[in-house]
Length: 154
Image (cartoon, rainbow, N blue to C red; front, side, top):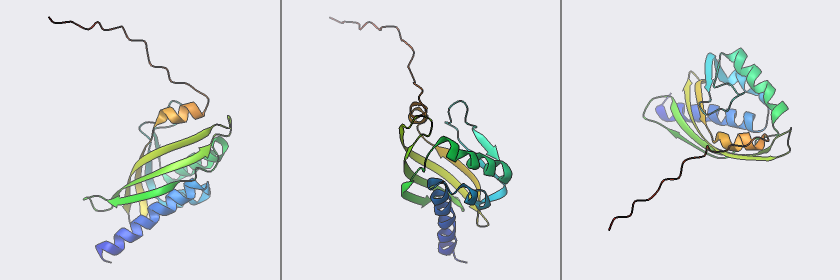
């Protein structure tokens, strides 16, 4: 298999993941991962795990998703290989609504995906957590900061 063929296969695995999650075909997600695969969500707000490890736990995590949100309708896929073999950066958007609030949820994602032997070994998803919190009915209020007086120089 040439490097180009491998990249095509790897990108197809990533697109299959995005298609499955985006349309909430959640039963199709876990089989795309290695048995010891990991999902990392470093910006996840409280109540959402920042790490899910192992295919069974990944399956459970995604099986719960439809209870929280409607179809994510992922679109605008842009998937680029990095210099590291099997590593990719995917950019995409979502357009969904939250089940509990009916509020629209739109976000932009940047995800680093490592594919090995035709399966996802690790997926690290970065998104704006404030958009998620607000769509779930929460608010994010910055702390008050003391006024800073400007110095006037003559």
